[in-house]
Length: 159
Length: 159
DNA sequence: CGGCATCCTTAGGGATACTG
DNA sequence: CAGTATCCCTAAGGATGCCG
Image (cartoon, rainbow over all chains, first blue to last red; front, top):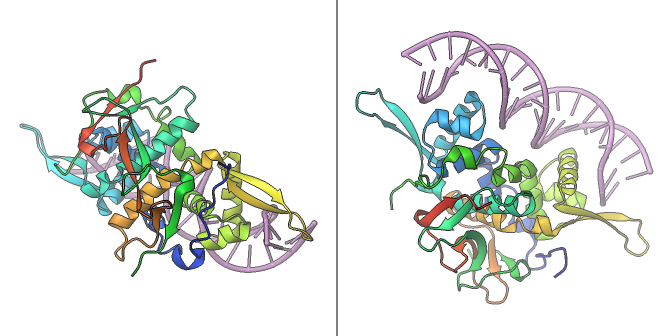
């Protein structure tokens, strides 16, 4: 296949994927910053407490506070009070379904980094718990075919 | 399944996925801005010319120039001179293999937006050219199992 | 421990004007 | 058409310090 990819021809760009309507643009309104992505990564890894988020992502407290608040406002994280016996109330940040549903996108980005930017190979592998095999994000159509980049087309849904 | 997801337990977070080593962090060094993502979207849609990029993404010329230059420097786009007969030389921005390989991540983000942010349904569908079925980004292990979020585990590769 | 307030620097991004 | 130069504003992010 050529080094470049052409998807056009099926659809007139200007009418269908305006900046305002594009779902990618909408998604980026919610998570377009580095800190937001990395905080979500931590949430997937099981981190729940404020200090752990800040320390493990490597960002300052104010940034962590601001970003976590945004993620809660957008409904990706839920802030839940809990208290261990004899302790005062603390808060845990946990992924909502909406937040958890971003995992494929994070894996896709992470594996792109593995492939093109990590000289030492992947620092972390995502595996299938049941069989131990490595997990990848891939494009697949509803009939189950794995889809190569050249086999894609774009369409505007009927309305 | 519960509303939250726990991946920890298999691996000590602090040693394996430091900020510097994480491939997600590395990927975000290259594309963490809204404009970078949207310019790549346009490149996938087949846009090649400067003005089209700026207009279709909805960003100003200086931003488009700065971001396109970065994407070229990082090797996601290639700036190629071409000339139509009787015209002077112009430049086209085309996806490199490295850039094209980001497509699954873009699709994953786009479809997350479709699902959680687009009230009117997906403005654009990605389909399999050969059979016409809708294409999704999904997590699948090397043995071909589709992997649910609860069936994931993390591991540090042998070194 | 889990933040918020303050101050600062840098990067992202828009507007306008100008050049080959 | 394909940018660059300039100016300005805002958001992202770090450092420090305070507070319940």
